Image 1 (tube, helix red, strand yellow):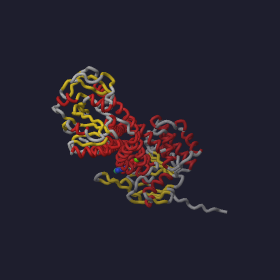
Image 2: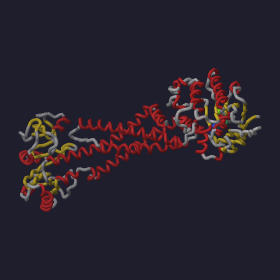
Image 3: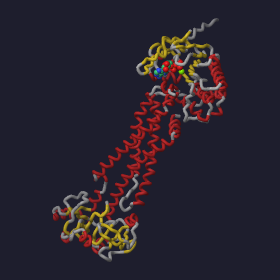
Image 4: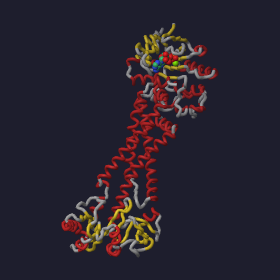
Length: 230
Length: 365
Ligand SMILES: Nc1ncnc2c1ncn2[C@@H]1O[C@H](COP(=O)(O)OP(=O)(O)O)[C@@H](O)[C@H]1O
Ligand SMILES: [Mg+2]
């Protein structure tokens, strides 16, 4: 007996995406027609010069910003057809962000930074065992009661990764996650993303300037002037 | 979890938190002190009226309402009053403005003692010379006056001959004739206290006296007078209290507006992060509203505590001029006012934060 496995639809599908910012009198065309498909479970590196529209693309994918035109489907659902609050809910359920500047809440401990993500994602009750394993994997289990100011950059970024993963999102969008880290910490963080991708099957999109970092990914996508170069 | 964030945010900027709460607290204290002051002063006047032992008081003019500047009337009304049925005793006094809120009162000590038993002396005793003055314990305390000392009032030197227990008649008492002479009010008085043989007849006698005196003097029963010493019966005071409450709301509004506005600007990035984590605009608003309410509640608590301080201060420094009581029934109301003002102040910063673009926040360096 043979089973027919249907060709999996891409978890991210982008068509004709444009984004124009109005900066005073001039229009800035941050995205000029982006098409992209990402398969579930893929680890994709997005590279390109500064100002090429990488962050803008991520913000639209995560539902933080609306495109000027074009369409995005996340897991088959069109972002453009969603209301603001539906987009927020999509973000709660499906997307985890990691930023270059960690962006932990300075007044909360590492643990509470992770907890607040769970709270905002409407996940209540105790965290599951696999998440605790992941904290061990990230090497921050003994740092959880510290505030961000008492953590090194590498540690903060690991907490940020834990925060992005705590709600078990299908997609992780990492915008230059190693941009502020030294080589050692960069390698550690990249290794962690790789492991997370392999173990938990999360789809990861990672913006990076560093070719070595891009090498951790399955595939590299290059951007220039708001377009993807094939 | 959101409460934890609220508490942590307030703790993180604790100086600002404390200052904002303090300013809100000062507003709450000013409401409570004003009210306590109004009640205390009125209660004091009421007590003073009651301890006279009079059933009826006659005052110049045709109205029973408050009248501080009543011109004296001839003392010849006194024998007339004494002749009326049921009137057992009556005594006339002259009251002259001496210092702010405290009149100097001229009385015939023998008549007064016959009327209601007289004063209870803590030190010294009755008048021995024309220029002797009796002061009460609060006046003595506030002005550090001791027996035998000379004090200058209404441009005249008086020698303190006795210090009396506070609460009866007035704080400054001199001989009637001397005061009449010094103030060019020969044979004039400003009040007549009347005692009846049967207090049940009070209303009837009041009516009869008012008919008899035809507006030269107006009789009121002690009960009616006492009821005038209620805030509700003094429209000016009521208006003043409303004004202070409105001011308190406005100041609360300004303080929280500024405090929350800076907090929101300062936390632009954090708010962006919360949004990236899936916080909806209402969640952000909720966060700031909670922070505001906590601030207002802290302020109210501080305000209530401080109102004990202002009371103690006033009662220590100027017990003769001002009387303050605690007004616990207003604590809830003052808190409500603080919270209302604070919430008004949180509206604009809150909406701004809720609407704020997450991207700009995150891009912002
Ligand atoms: N909020 C904004 N307002 C105006 N212009 C913007 C804004 N965000 C980005 N841009 C512009 O859009 C272009 C793409 O920016 P971005 O997506 O951040 O590029 P990258 O992440 O590749 O460096 C840049 O020219 C940038 O100046
Ligand atoms: Mg960027």
